[in-house]
Image 1: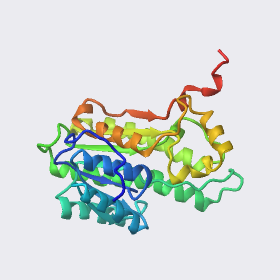
Image 2: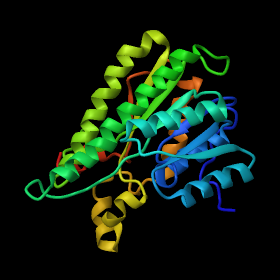
Image 3: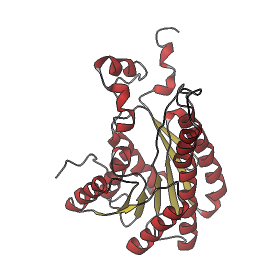
Length: 274
C-alpha cells in the first residue's frame, strides 16, 4: 500500500459525502485522501485513466475509508449528469464538491490554435460551471442535513494565475480569471441558501501539470526564485487546506480564495529592492 499523503484531523468531515473531479493524481488525489482521512465518503472522478483512480480508491479503502470511482469528462454536460447520478446511487447525494479537474495547452498567442484555446476553457471554466450547477441542484434538493452547518459546500481549485499574468498561457490564465469571478458570483447568489462557495489558488505544486518547470536543477532554482518561502508546494498542502475549507471550522467563510503559494503573490522580484 502507498503511504497516505495527509495528516488531516480525523472526523472533521464525518458522515459527509464528497465528489472530487480529476482525483486520480496530483492535487485531486491529495484532496480525496485528506477528505477520506477526515471521515468523508469520496467519489473520485477521472477523465480517462481508470487505473490511477482505482489505485487511489483502493488505498483509501485499505486505510479504513470509503471511496469509489466514476468516469466523467466534466466538459460534457451528459457526463456531468451521469457523475452526479452515480453520487446519488452510491451515497444518496453529496455534501461537498471539489472542482479540481483542469488542463493546460500552452503556446504563444500567435501560435495558439482555437482548438487548444477552447479545450482549456471547456474544462477549466465551463466544466467547473457544469459541476457547480449540478451540485447546487443537489444541495437544494437535499436541504439541510445533520452533518454540516451548511446545506452544501463547493471548493474550486483555481491558481495564482487568476491574478498573475502568465505569458504563453493565455487560455489557462483566462480560464482561472473566469473561475475567480464565478466563485464570487456564486457565493453571493447562494449564500441565502446556506451554500458556501470558496476557492483555493495554488502556486507551484509538485504535480505532473508543472513538471516541465522543474525538470533540471537550473529550472528548479529559477522556479524557487519566484517562491519567497523557499520550497515548491506539495499536494498535501492543498489537501489539508481543502479539509478545513469544507468543514464547519470555516462555516462563516464564503466567496473567499485561499492563496497557497509560498508567497508567489508577494512580488518576489522586489526582494532587496525596497
